[in-house]
Image 1 (tube, rainbow, N blue to C red):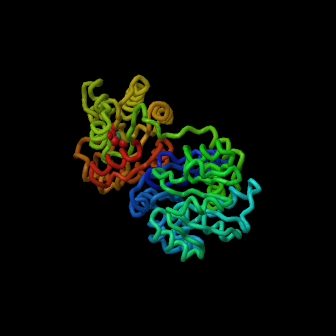
Image 2: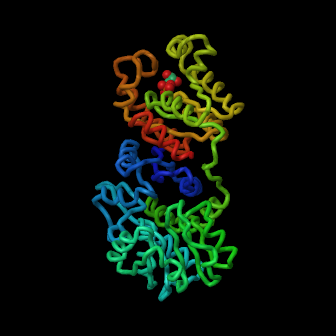
Image 3: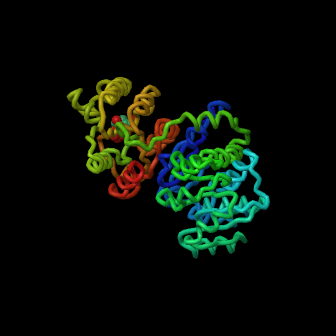
Length: 431
Ligand code: S3P
């Protein structure tokens, strides 16, 4: 069978994203051999580093990387260029293609509910890439668009390119008063719309999900409300078509969105997985100190229990024996709470371990290049890499395990930087 293709949604924070749930369900339903995960990156450069290293086939891009990503790609379509952001990167034989389907997400969400856009006054809150995509889609479908943003100059710049109006933050109430449709695409920290400004004749669409105070208030006031999940679904339909050449089952997408859990609650445990030398122990200890969790290293537990070192176990009992002990040790996760687990690099090879990890921990995959990993590995401590051909063996092992790490994890992060930066990145996701 062909190797599974890898996909991800990339941004920071990214743990809240339900894209992996949607895409993995569609892949399973259509027997497509692919895995879709989350990629937490603080810059487009970092996201592209992982994309290339992991040989990914495509990525969804979310805040705050949409504009930064556009600027790093050479193959851009006219909609993305005008919006000034991409929400999709696709690998083709020639290049990395940047596309934007966010504008379709907005327009299709409205039209599927029989809400017209032609000649309708639409107030778009925000001037970031999502807001600009919304404005672009609405304008192309005959709407009259007004952009309102906290930083007025940013709204003015976007309005000039898109050919619509821009107004200062202070005039929000006045312009909302004459609007038919409100699209909010501002940061989760802002909630500038007062409940009493929401007339029941207004249509309200918020990019934010799973929680939206604006949508909750609008519903109470009798407005027609379109939640962020709907926008997510309608931008994902053309992305799935782009990635696979197939039509997705919209009903399945809706079912998944309604039933999947978000990962943003404080996790019971955190399991760090990844190849030898990716920094699980160092980062695990730093993270445990930061989150006030306890730290546990599966290899240390194995050595303690067996009364001998990992190389000794491999040499006298063989790998299969080691894997059985490793599996038993991982089973202990079920009895624990408030632990960071640094899991042996090969623990993902047993599919049974994936379930234990998923049921009891938030699973974070740390990735560093093999060159970095080799710099970190102390000679003689990893029996699988003993011998002359260690670099070749490592390359093959890593390659074979990539889809397993992707399947077993909730999120991947680059561990090339300093331990402090990596701990900060994980902390930002969980906090
Ligand atoms: C292994 C990784 C090692 C250790 C053993 C086997 C592997 O742990 O469990 O040498 O198969 O990748 P680290 O990932 O902590 O190096």
